[in-house]
Image (cartoon, rainbow, N blue to C red; front, side, top):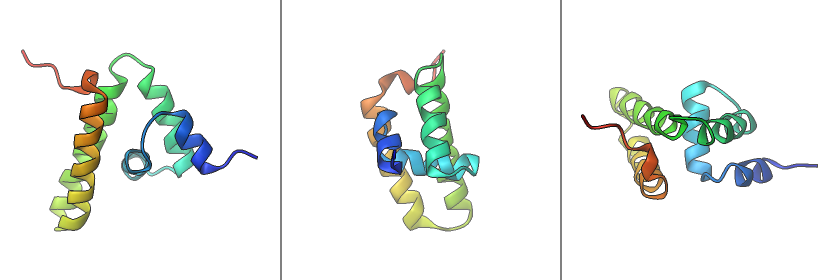
Length: 91
């Protein structure tokens, strides 16, 4: 049987990044891992994942959940480092 950890490993993102997608999209971890795998192979997909994490940070700050916002910020920085193609276009 395939475990949640197997699903997360297949999409090449961390558990924290998958959790951020799950939070943003209101999905299970497995559903978020499947969406992440799809997005990471789609045009502009990494930028969409980045934006989901940014949205989650804003939501945490709006609810004054600073600890969660910090956790998400760490995930965002790691994601941006590992996936520079996620950077927003600067015109």
